[in-house]
Image (tube, rainbow, N blue to C red):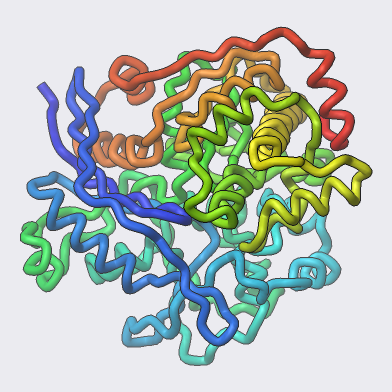
Length: 475
């Protein structure tokens, strides 16, 4: 009978965790070994990730994890570190919300062409994609290797260099058809070929622990670090407890990644114009999705309101607030930077001829209804553009805890919503490790049997949601 333990290092944009997953033929359980805050740092006007602080927390988490059979690391996409010839990090990775890429995307599109970029990469045009970060300033001459954040952390654990493919596919420099770096595009943009290391796939062993890491964590040097779906959404989608292929998903946290799972990319002009991305998933799949701003709008609102705001109280009040009083386009780039989110929501409403929310509860209602409409548009457009029907929507990640958002998404989509698992990313991370180390069962069936799931059925008030969708110009 198969039963083993795996450490899933899961880094989110606002917090990180090291979870220990126990995987067996009839078991999938999680234990939190260590959780910590991920707090960016602004230095001389540039917003950085505190990558050394995150690495220290990972070491603390692995020490607390105890006896495990493997380690896997996932994080958000697009951000990276540059190493010199000696393998030394040249500078702290810059946060994707930093303003250094302002205007760069438009220049690249004008130079290469939107149709060419999309035909090669299949990637949604977002101003913070890796390609635009690299072109925002000159690459240092001493830079020899680019490592995405999970690959950088794996390098520090093992001393081995490689680029895991699910995260590489988010850079805007990956050929989605060929399944490799697009060196023709890289050279056309004037970027050095040397930066881009060999690709790894989920399940590959990235290396074993360095001696100093083993000594600091108390783990054996022989412990493998296994490449997982290192883009956190790739891991989360693997943990969707779907019973068939006619499902949509929303991996809901700071961002909402809403779409469907396919076996081939959709690279049509209509897909490009609709803002869809084709990213590599686990197991020869394509995550065909649209990035929606997500619970960032709520998180920044709570931060603006400070400790005076209790989320549970606000959600209860928002549930009783008048529906559709104010709506915003959750894709508006004005909402991307940190700052006073309630003020920006009010300004958006004024620009669009609406009365701004009059209370915090109304602001929360506005955010959640707008996100539900964003989820609806992404799922419906993905189904239409791919020809893959959707019969149920799965919400995984932290947003699965938000019952009001789940209910509103079911109402907006006119489809049942299955919420959970909350720790989908850590579960998907661990399941890739389990499969690489001998587990032969059906991964999604194991999730269905072992995790707490909640079903929300639509109210049937489709006409009201149709009117609301037209107000913000979505389907």
